[in-house]
Image (cartoon, rainbow, N blue to C red):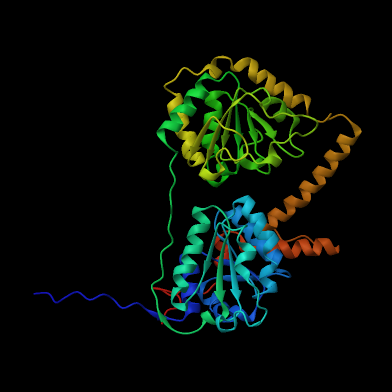
Length: 442
């Protein structure tokens, strides 16, 4: 008879190894920050783990870089700094990541656990500082929970779509423990409740002048093609929410430009005539819906359908007729499926509406024959040429051009750093491979 089964013992490691292994388990390849004594033990392990530490000249810049990295890649952006003043310098950038819904993980070593309240080295009560600008705060209250709390901070940054804080007493990086490294959790979202989607589809089917506001949620969900398909079926004009000009292609005939501060007059005049507005993946923030250019454009009597993956955003800024708590991509696909079985009015009267859309876009374009416009075109061409050379370098197609001015030298340094961060196989040449079966555990 077979003997009794025995559980495999958990591997022994230091808390720094548990921390670094958990970063690896979450696919971290870059960490931005300034070197500090509070986390030197973990930092020494980064090269073996295949993690590149990118030093900055100021901690605020490190957190902004983590935010930008996250927005560009869709992955976690990670920043770390010295406890106390180094951590407080994160605040502005973490707040920016909060409102941009960027899954940034701010790792905040703090003063040693045995000197809390005694004025220990650079002691600052770091959790309250970030309490209103993070989606979740994890505090390691025992070295044995290092991997658990690190994993939770990473999971919550993705599931809550926003920055999280991982607070670690600086003496908790040392010691020895038995530890299992948690696997990263992937939480998938659906289109929303059937009842809400049916109600939204009914409103869209009856709309004579539907307009879609395409927001950041469309980008996060990789749902631009689904948004296009829905707009084309409804023959509905599309405007971008504030700061999300990439949420719908600008060369599409239904695109009318961005709303909000310094936005498109054509888009504002179009949405002012809507009888139904589909806010797809946007919280309809005030800076993107308040009057602009002397136009109080938000439609007062329109029915508003809002789709957002965060139920707390539904109806927060604008009163809504239907709220759909779901993924923007899945919701757009589901609405298109439901509309296929309905009599859709906007498909019958599309001609007049599209003439209005095209005419509005043309009217609000600058006069291409004006002298100022000609000078602007020359400047734009020169700028595009310069940017094209830099992108050619980033893509490895040519050498970086000779740079003369101080600003250009700074730009060259930034380009070299960006090139190293690009998700390209060339980036990995020369990197030490991660050992099989775990990079650090003894």
